[in-house]
Amino acid sequence: MVHKDIIQRKKYLEETVDKIIVCLVGQPRGISLKCWRDSLPVQFENTFYGRDNKDCLPHGVQTKRPEIHFVCSTWNEDSLDRYVSNVYDSSRFNSVPSISNVWYMGNTTGFGKEMDSDKIRDLIRTDLDGKYLGNIKLKKEKFMNYCNEVFDWADSVRFSFPSPYEIINRIKFKSKSIIKWDSPLWAGQHLMFIQSIKDYPDELFNKSSSNTLILRMRWDTFIHPKLTLWDFVDILFLKRGTDRLSPMVGSCVYSPTIRDEWNVFNDKGAKIFANDFEDWLINLSGDWALDAEITPTPEEKLTRFYEDKKFNIISPNNIKMYHTERSILPTSPIGIIRDTGDPKYEFFVKNKLTNLLDTWRTDWYEWDNTEI
Image (cartoon, rainbow, N blue to C red; front, side, top):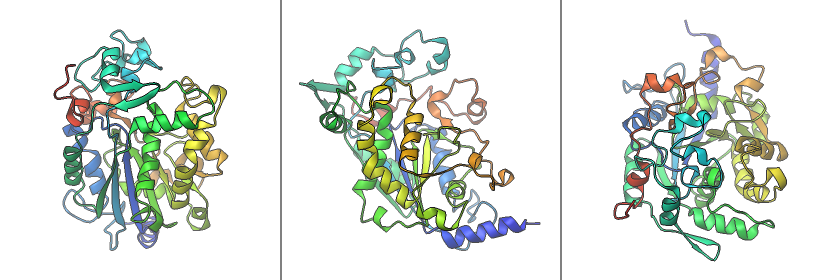
C-alpha cells in the first residue's frame, strides 16, 4: 500500500519542478572509466527513464517531467593540482606519503604512474613574468562527443571551457595581497560553475525560476546507486512555499560546514554565487585568505560565504520535518572516485569504483606527443 505522504510528495514534485540544470565541473577524473559511465550518468538517466525503460519518480510512475539540461565544464588547458604542485598537500604526491594519506597511492596524477612534480609543472604551464600560460590543451572535440553520447537523453548538453591561467592571472591582478598560487586549485570547480552560469544567461539561467533546481557537482563524484536527481530535488523543495524566494543552497551535510562534492541551488542562490563569490574570496585575509594553507578548509570558507550572504542552507540533518525513512540520501555514501583506497569507503569495493586504472590526463589532454 502506498503511503499517503508519498503520493502527496510525488504530486507536489510533479506540479512544482519546471527545470533541472546540472553543472558538472572540475578536472575530468575518472570519467573515462567503465565504473563511472555505469554509475553516475545512469543514475541521472534513471531520474526519468528506469533501467527497464519505465518512467520513474522516487515512488511511482510520473505523468509529467521537468526539462533537464547539462552544462559540462572542465579546464581548457591542463592545470596544476595538488598532485603536481608543491603549494600544499605535497605528501599526497610523494612516493612515500604520510600514513594518513596512504590510500592516495593509486594513480593520483592521471598518468598511470607517479611522476616528478617539478617536471610536470614545467610541462603544464609557462611562467611569463608572473603570468601563466597553459601548454597542454583539452581534447575538446573528443570530450564534447563523449558528453553528448553519455547524456544524449537530456533536453540539452552545453559546454564551458574556462582557462585556469586566465582566471588565476585575473585573481592576482584584482587581489590587494600577493597570491602565491599558479592555478585556482580547490577553488577551480566553483569558478567553473560561475563561468557556466555566465556563459548561458539567456539560454538557461535567466529563464530559471524559483521552481528550478540547479545542481553543481564534481565529475568524479559517486553517490548511492539508488539515488536519482529526484533525491537532490527533494532537498531543495522540502520546505516548500516562500522559502525558495530567498537564496538557497543545499547539501547532504551541514554540521557545521557543508560538503563541496556537490551543492543544489535555487535560481536566486546560483545568481548570487555567480555574482559575488570570486570577489568575496579574493577579499579574505589572514588565515582565511584564498591561498592560505588548508586551514580553514575549503568547506569552511564556502560555508562562511553562504552564511555571510544570508543563504537559506538546506540539508536533511538540519531540517526537523525531514522524514529520513523516505530517502537514503542523509546516510548514503557520497564521495569522490579518487579516494578508492580509503578504508572507510567500503562502498568502493562493493561497487567496483576504482581510480587505479584512471589515466584522465592523457585521455582528455594533449599529452600524446609530450615526453613524460
